[in-house]
Figure 1: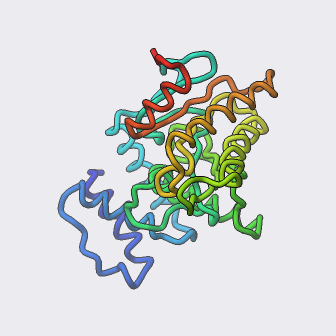
Figure 2: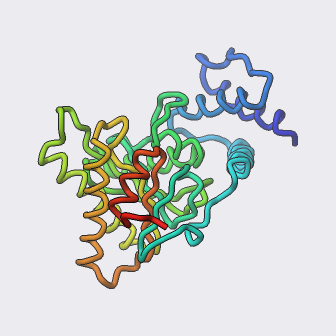
Figure 3: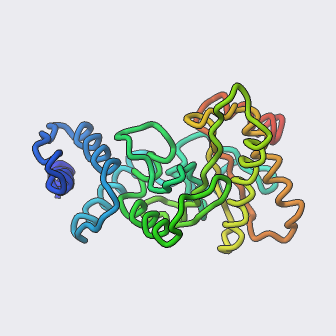
Length: 264
């Protein structure tokens, strides 16, 4: 099946689910078709969908991953001890778990084509991730507390799992003491979750920066110090590799200085 035909079927399947979207025109080119598909996936509520649609979606997402360069083997990353620093798309890393900066609903970002990490991870994993999160949250019965962590399968991502954590939102000119404690709790909870599930590697995004307004430098300092403190108190940890994943140059420079002074 050609990519065009597959995308047409996927888009049409989502259009038919909603009266609001069923008359949306399907674009002519592959790039715009993929944007529309992602937007419809972003807005889709967690509800069952037929197996054939899932099969075609999985094929499409695997194709998109290959076009991005395929999965990135964390064993190939430059590292010092347990730590690695990598600048790029976290949805390409094949760590046992990647960390998602979630919101308290834990269902992903519903804003179509939004640039947040939550949107990126759910879009690359497929609609199964929202369904898994919905099942988890229905069992909990309450919103996810800030500073805790939950684990789900990763579905179409190269990683095995996604660990979801809700970081603090900074509403003031600078983080409060409570904000600092909650951000540290996010990193500690993710490490504990990975350890409890016997995972050997975890890749962290920059939790609470960006949309949640935590200052980049202080957030990185808390991230590194919390992870290092975790290993100090858990010398026999199953976790052998921690990847600090960044997207922006400013974050790469900050982590480089914090971790190694001179990262080689």
